[in-house]
Image: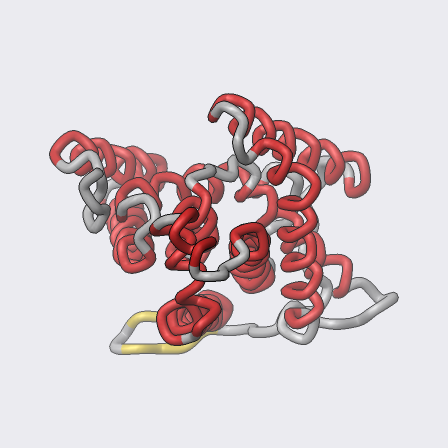
Length: 272
């Protein structure tokens, strides 16, 4: 799940060199979309509403680029930071206004119960989320690495001017990157809503951990996001079990700081 959330962030950064500080709040919106579709008016569980969720978030990602990001592409980095941070504040405030600050849960749980494996009991919602995240991650990876459109994204990420000389429309690639980034968190949010409460602040911790994941793996590295996501997830689980639940994030951030001090560009980042 951490890898999939970080994938959306690293695609945007890899193509545009812009950090989307509202990335965690995109996840929150996806979870609220799953929640709304689970209400009696629609009666869909999170998996049934997933295609609609992806379409809505993909469109929102493109709309965000068109309205908010495109005007500040050539602006100073500080203007880009404040733009996405302002979007974070707006989305969080909008969610609080519409849904209040209460905790919500989807009305129709997709997976219920647990599975016994070698003497351990694993919850079905978490298993489904892990498998779904792996499928989505693999689909995005293959799209970027094996299709002409994906190669165009890589070309723009490598050199925008040279890509333009080859006839690639950079603005379309930028919009597509934002759409893919939002689609990644739409899947993550829908899967997460099956076993996690939905509330306006839910994107804060996941958004922060997505930045840690991307920085640990290397900004712009898809493979780095995958392995860093696994490292953070396993570290969090083991630290919470072997030490104490209150120390799990402390251990994660300690490992992150250690890697950054030793290898500032991340585990699989390229030297500048």
